[in-house]
Amino acid sequence: MDSHNLPAQEGINEIARKRLKQARKEAGVTQDELCLVVGKLRNNISDMERGRLTISFADMVLMADKLGKPIEWFSQDEDD
Image (spheres, rainbow, N blue to C red):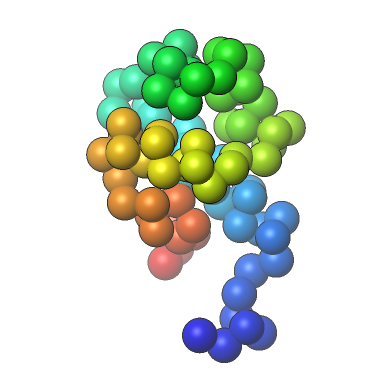
């Protein structure tokens, strides 16, 4: 993959947070339910979705499984 075509880290984080919220709503999962999966406080999930807290890869793997999405889906812009 050509590194010149990779989005900046901020762009990836922005995509991941939007996709997290989208996947959570599509799956009908509350922030409270998701926080139990990753062992975080509810406000941590809210902060992840708002971009106030960076989502760790380990947390993303757990949330992706709970939400029924492949991990790659969280790094793809909706236009992809």
